[in-house]
Amino acid sequence: MRIDILTIFPEMFTGPFDHSIVKRAKSKGLAEIVIHNIRDYANNKHKNVDDYGFGGDAGMVMMIQPIADLIEKLQSERTYDEVIFMTPDGILFEQSIANQLSLKGNIILLCGHYKGIDERIREHLITMELSIGDYVLSGGELAAAVVSDALIRLIPGVLNDETSALSDSFQDKLLSAPVYTRPAEYKGWKVPDVLLSGNDKAIRQWQMDQAVDRTKKRRPGLLES
Ligand code: ADE
Image (cartoon, rainbow, N blue to C red; front, side, top):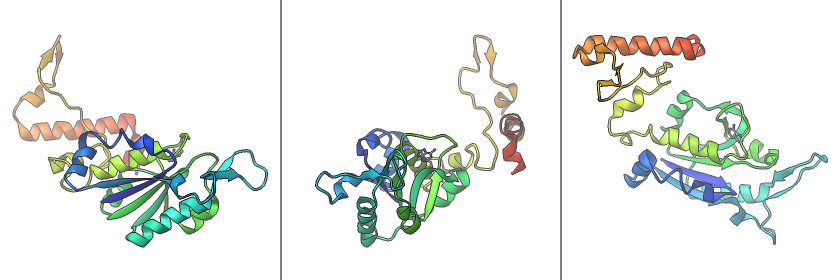
């Protein structure tokens, strides 16, 4: 999978993709993340990427030209399955969308800023709009990093144990059961007996009961859907 991220703050991506699972996915050649600086495509003297909005509203709006030129350049080089704009008024990003997108070959993630981007970009160039939650971030960069991370760990071969992505919270609309490791007792805090019993069937049943119980208590809406 190739993810092209379009941003005016490319430095924001130097950290998130250089560690852990995403780093491994890149070094195994299973994921490629390419960061593009929108400003490099501005064809005006001062390399401006934003301008005052029509209609007198306070706030700057990201201009069409640099973004359109960049998207069109990328699309002339390869086919993209989706051109995604990160925005709080997009559809809510959740595990089922991550699953679908992780099967795609090439996607573009466009990060917005200021008051927004010229609506004509959304009308003509964007195929999907994603929000990572009902709150407003200063820009789409952190949201794009969240989405990229959630997709990349689902690509077959990225996780060592493929079943571990399947048993994640949300994968079956249930939160995960609690997990424990050694020691079996710490200052009187004990691991549940069943996990030490060696009885595989009882352990699976306990994990399922815990998952359902947690989901009922913490996120009952997941069970209803
Ligand atoms: N840009 C600003 N806020 C955002 C959000 N909640 N989700 C996606 N992109 C955003």
